[in-house]
Length: 633
Image (tube, rainbow, N blue to C red; front, top):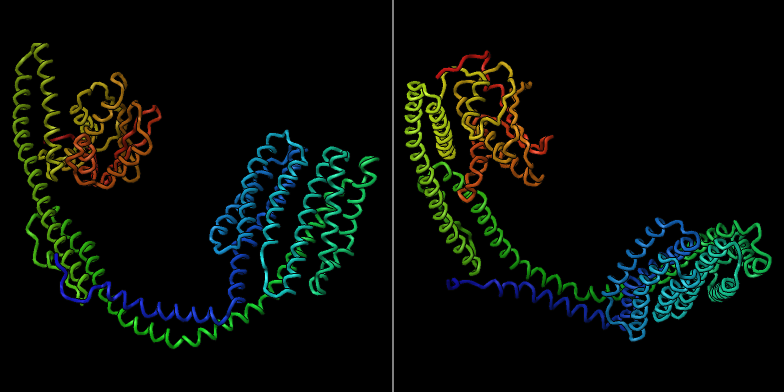
């Protein structure tokens, strides 16, 4: 369909977006030139801290804990659950780091190389874990495997330019050195676990521990010498504390007498000494990082003030462009909102109501039902969409009317054929009854009984077609009928009736008006039980009274159904689905649901204790007679 006259929506969107976008680009270009190189570096530092420094520090913390738990597991073969849980935390941290690192752009060549090296080391974490799980690796190799990954992160920190100010850079570098000393402390704690697990200090452990102690103390002393008074305070107090001195004594003992004279009595407190110092170091490290952030904040505020000034200069232009764009936006939004409301009403109200009405009334649609939607619009594309919706409505209405007429025609065919068959079968039953009364030969009488039973089943199938067409079968009783007679009538309409055993029901009766439908419903359930159970098994028919009416249960000994299929069948029985010609293999299901819905009967299927199914039909008390009565036509 050629477009109608009007301004295309593409042009409106271009006018809507071009002016404010052009103004914003010019504003930020001006701001970037005003702030200069320091502003760009500050933004880069923020991105590096967000995407690399912070998440990699979390990875280091998790790796340090995992290293300790892995070594403890390796030397004692205990704590597997704790180690596995920590591995999960490490994996989460690694995944978060790699996700954020992918967002980082414009890295220097050195930073790119260090980041690649760190990712390579992280890939080796799985191999370290496999060696730990295998139990054949030396604890020192495990400590070294984790340490290589952490060292790679510190090399990445060295490549970062933390702040443009040199004084702040020195302080940040010193804090990084303290972080390295903290990691060495973590390695010492892991090695202490090895020593305690073996009960002695062997030469390899002694050599490694001596190197760790020297490295940690050197990093700690050098970092303290570079820190100013504000940052040095907590670390200086820590160096004078009893916690730090107790750990120094433990370090000296492991390097000295423990290597020659065996572990002293105080060795049992070494893990506690390490944990106490670790907690204090973590606290100080967090305070130092926070203090550095507070010092960088004034610089960042200064840069933001410059950006704010630049933004203020272009504020008038931005506001003007936005107001100009909002004028077009408001009109376009109004048109689209009107189109949306009209389309929603068409789909959810008018067409839905028409389809629902056509299910019971095939009269042609009224003018109100097929009225075209109308939307006030000055945009050609919106007008075209409105016309397309009206065309869709016409096609949908025509299809719905045709479908309704077809369904009604099929229903009428069903009813006409079923009525004719029902009349013939009724006459045949009368003839067979007359012949049965007239003969006394056992063989002939047996054959007549078989024909009578076969005709009764044919009559039920004819009535099923009438029921599927929402019509009444035609048979009825004036007086209440005992429930036992109703159940016997239902069993008589089943091919393998001899397999069905009716347990003695309570002395209640059904109203005559519902006898035919209830008997038909029960016949369908009983036949289903006989068809889907082994030929020689029994089908039990039990009846019991409930506070709300009468419960009839049909229990077979078949193979049963899967839970999903059972739930689907119960849902169909509860919702009275529309009859679908494509599902002819489940006519009985549709018949049962129609009859149950007609009289307020609840039918459910449940697993049987014998392995088959139990079909339960709950009849409301409104269908029951006050007193049992003899059946009467």
